Length: 141
Ligand SMILES: CC(C)(COP(=O)(O)OP(=O)(O)OC[C@H]1O[C@@H](n2cnc3c(N)ncnc32)[C@H](O)[C@@H]1OP(=O)(O)O)[C@@H](O)C(=O)NCCC(=O)NCCS
Image 1 (cartoon, rainbow, N blue to C red):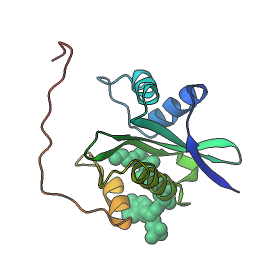
Image 2 (cartoon, rainbow, N blue to C red):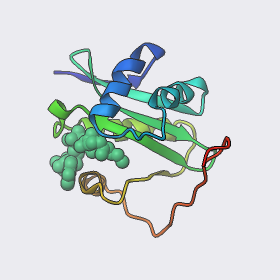
Image 3 (cartoon, helix red, strand yellow):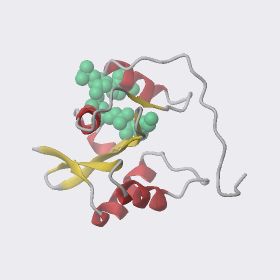
């Protein structure tokens, strides 16, 4: 069955958010609907959708901050894992960033997500010796 990876449109929002929920990527302190809308709101970010037989099978959020490229919310449908869709989505993210002159792609993985760490290692991604430091904005603690 042919797989395509193309930018998601606003019409894909419900299906994409359902996929993120199914994949266990959402957290109570994040609003996935707002995250989707923000990613589609400007030219520096996008959500890429993998479709098999016309149906959403996976997606990834990608963005370029002007220095590095970042990937978030990579998810493949439970019934379609192990078929190369995750790799196809990461390759599409790399192309999206290269087309914008971005020299490096990076991402954050929760430390206990051994499956994702194995997946990224299989794709040639290295663990880097950095600590992520952050603070919520907008008056939230
Ligand atoms: C991680 C995820 C996106 C992988 O998608 P997928 O479509 O199953 O992966 P692919 O079939 O493209 O696999 C690509 C390669 O990774 C390898 N791989 C996949 N999962 C792996 C694992 N748990 N451990 C080791 N290698 C793994 C595959 O064997 C394959 O290698 P090969 O091409 O050399 O045979 C999918 O498991 C998923 O949606 N997980 C839940 C959400 C998640 O954790 N996302 C990442 C957040 S940072």
